[in-house]
Length: 232
Image (cartoon, rainbow, N blue to C red; front, side):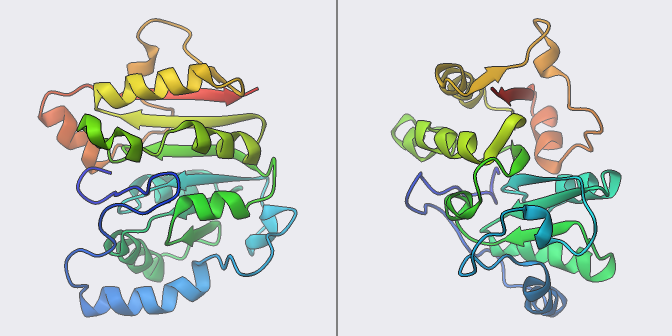
């Protein structure tokens, strides 16, 4: 995400892991929260990802780069029957989420605080109902486009872990990254763009809570795009 969400390339990490020094409350929440909510990739992945959670669930979805957790927490609250796995390598964003969960526990939330490609490679095939990549770092300079998370190899990863009919959602306010994602997904045989009308990809998703990055984009005159692709 802009400013905080730094992405790895397909195989190497680029950007920040740490920002401002954590406040004592955040550090304590992180120390106590990660053992409770974190996913350990040294253990084998369960065949059914719902076993990662302590409550009965109907599905499991993934959000890559949740920033401060606004969307992830809203999703978990309005969809208590869905398991949400959130990935965020930026430690300050993870600490913010853990601080909130310390006050309002989320039994249908699990997290991973490292490279999303590691988690994707750990997950069983056809195990997710959905993947969200919302306002990722756009890497605006052309020489850095190879660092964008949307790539042929990562779309292969998405295709492997998504169930047939599963959904990949991508939101951004950067035109070049929106076009980049459209081109990559339409070129991939496993994904079909869902766009029923010429302008409906400028309409937020149902139950969309908005994010601070989106608010900043709107203030600065940029129009967000909300793309949806179905795993065929």
